[in-house]
Amino acid sequence: MKLPFRRGDTTERTRGQAMVEFALILPVLVLLLVLAIDFGRVFFGYVALNNAARIAANAAAQGPDTWDGTGTTAEQDAYRDEVIRDLQSINCDPPSGTVWDRAAIPDPVFTNRVGTADPYEIGDRVTVSMTCELSFVTPIVGAIVGSPFTFVAEANFDVRGGIINGVPVGGTLPSPPTCIDAVVPNLVGQSVATARTTWFGAGFNTGTFNPATGQDTETVSSQSVTAGACMAKSTVVTVTTSTATTCTAPDVAVPNMVGMTVAAARTAWDVNFDVANFNPSAGFDTEQVDTQSIPADSCRDPGDTITVTHSVPPPPPPPTCAMPQLVGLSSNKAEAPWRAFGFTGTYTAAPPTQGNGNYIVQYQSLIGGQTYPCDSDLEVGPVSQP
Image 1 (cartoon, rainbow, N blue to C red):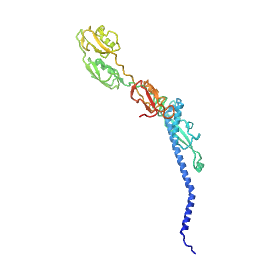
Image 2: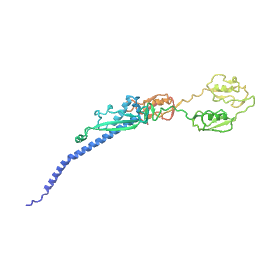
Image 3: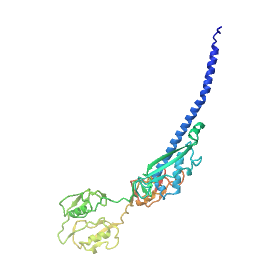
Image 4: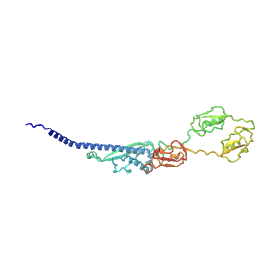
């Protein structure tokens, strides 16, 4: 006899079947979830370890002097502290224990690639290898690949930056600036012919002198290029001239002594006049002539008397020095190139923002490439200033 169909029985059987199937698949789902978590942990640890290795190799490439025998323990500790700061969030442990400390940070290895005397010079190679151990959450994964799982990250950089034995990037210690072209001579007071010879003889052999010809006996009264300036050898100079005074004997032309020292004026007067008639007759030698009682270039008898007024000349401007670029150099070695440029002031390295000891200069109170009085003070710091 056929039993009547009852919907409730079917529903209960379907629900029970689903619960059984869920119970069977749940361990697999949990295993896949945990495997995904472990895979993510491995990937994160590997990326973090590679970043730390790159930071370490980059720092060593910029400061090889820290490792070539001239560095200090403080510099090496600062290097390790920088790497440790990048490892603070890593999820794996060093082979030596469970804490990333200075002892867990390996030293960089330098390789001589350019055939120089040592492997710490521009173009050589620095390598940093770091090892990390990760324990798996899933025992089955640990049983398959081993737990803790060890992976290694390696980074290579060419030595290229910072300061090497006190030498900035790319070569030798910068020398104090010198004129590599030619120094402009003082042509005022010379005859045009003499000034023309003086100009080319000073090294301006590819330059131009105006006027190129003629006016040889006239006197140069001004020049377009400042005397004492360092200029290219192709510089053009133009002079203005005045006709030399012609006097009828026995008269002679009075020299222009304004701007000379009293001693030099006395000597110039003595060329054609009686030095006994020069006032002041003695003393005040280093003072500067302001005026003269007889106009320059006037014709006067050699026995005439002249009186000059004089005063202490203003002090010369303080000597200036060119400021070198120090950003990127070690703070305890940036002073040497600064002194080499002639500065005599006080060098101050501001305290580092983290840790103790040496750091890479990121700020200097005097701008590189500008000129300042040589007795200026300098402050460098580890961070940029507003």
